[in-house]
Image (cartoon, rainbow, N blue to C red):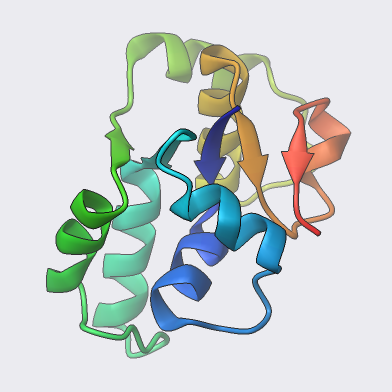
Length: 128
């Protein structure tokens, strides 16, 4: 399975937060899983850190190490992702979620998310 982490899933994984289900943790840690995180998630985390709205174990600096340790690939934004974004209905207005959804759809990825808005877009998700 190829997976894309929603921002909160990445944060909870990094922080060891018990809100992230064991099934999701196992998928992320399984090196046979192709696991991705959007550059948009890193951008969102940086914004929240700079506003003091987020505490992250190790800070932004440790994200790169964690991605490397667990072989999580950074997914850049492409023109195709933006084109897909333009076709999404506005069930949900969060710009970071919308780009993650469009990336997941374009790249045929299953998203690890607790967000109830993602399934509305007919994107496969995994949580519990």
